[in-house]
Picture 1 (cartoon, rainbow, N blue to C red):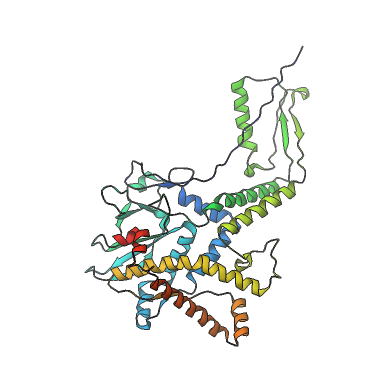
Picture 2 (picture 1 turned 135 degrees about the horizontal axis):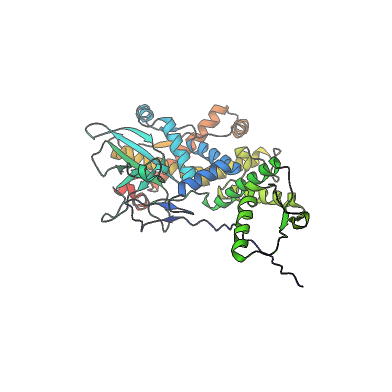
Length: 416
């Protein structure tokens, strides 16, 4: 008599390319923004930062370079007031948010007469949601809530108006880059590396679970008690999948209780050749894609050593990489922050001032520059800062200041 045999193929989890959506059709008065679910955008970015070593190093290093040694003014008399209006720690946090989330915000505190700004504070941008636009052509306020997944906390949300739209004591300056097909939020510049950051996290899970479970091999489970009904097979498959698949379940063992030896399940080991090489290839490729997304020319600038770039790299190569990264990546972030701060100061009764960031330059580059030019390291650093001053003045001459049409076109907050 011919036996009835069935082989089931399990469809394991499948990942799609992230698709960031601003839910403008939401029933809420605010606009959720999501990647995999309705309002998980900021949560997913935070997780990618916390679980990917390469991504975290790139974000931390870039944020440090954006902040540099802080912001200052060419007007020495106003500079002391600037440091009181804008605390250094708050500016550092805003710089970090802008790099991590692609969005950042200041909380503006006015004086009692609403004639002059007293302080610019950092406010966690992940707690803000834009109010849905109805009759107005621009965003007029943001909602603040510490947990948008908790419906009870949503009911206690606070509405904060945008700078220049009210007489309230507290207002918001929301900072974001222009994004085509998006109006309420912008994306971080490294968004294309989100999946590769998740890959690094999954590889970490895989290895730690393999270590904890003794590197048990991959097996095929044959159940020799007859062929169950389709419903029973589906239940068994679901249980096996939930218990033994995924990087968090790597190396788990199974316990089988049988009526006799003949009915015991058969476990056939499936050998995968060169598995360590495959893992290494995936790890190297993920790291490379993350570095590309962050536009990092030389990983050594952030203390990242790769197989193609060890610590024997020439200092001239590092100087070139730093110059490219500073010009193409850091300065655009700094200009975005300076424009927003200058706008707040102008609307806040302080007038317009020439602001610039004091740069954080690697010591090895300053030392080589000092040797080449017969300067001290301090003098070399002053030359770098003078270059930034000239860059900001050139930007102003080209009309990319808060008063320019270009700025008004890209930052709706200025229209308020």
